[in-house]
Image 1 (cartoon, rainbow, N blue to C red):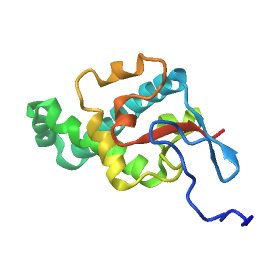
Image 2: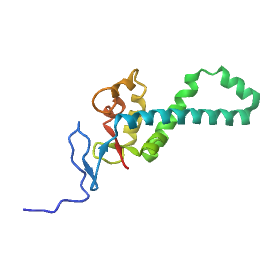
Image 3: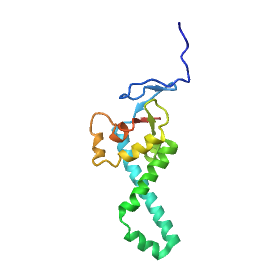
Image 4: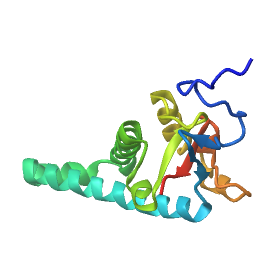
Amino acid sequence: MNEAPNPYAAPQTLPDEPPEVVADHPLVPAGQGSRLVNYFIDTIGQIGLAVGIGVLAVLIGGEEAITALEETPDIVLGLPIFFAYYLLLEGTTSRTLGKWVTGTKVVNEDGGRPTTGQIIGRTLARLIPLEAFSFLGRSARGWHDSIPKTYVVKIR
């Protein structure tokens, strides 16, 4: 029997391969160049967020805030900013500032929106020492993609 395919059925893919087509649009994995640009822009975005928080703290708290910021270890301030940046942006839009600029976004294995757990997994995996070197292979898929089973694909 020839039944018409269900347009609402989830696309089927192999676990280790990127999805090929979703909603009649081919999904093309982002290349290493795009991923590197994403990294640099996202780093600048995190620094901008930190500076904005610092300025706001100084405007509200004055000299006491300056002293507190100077005495606080960088990691105590940096980790919450790091988590806020990735969890808020990727969790709400599947994109960071870098992905907006390069025309890429995060998708799950089916080409759909990643779950909150996958976004948390991506963010935590970025903290693995030497994770940045996981991009040196043939594919532009790092550990923060492969561990939570996500892909970064071109959308324009």
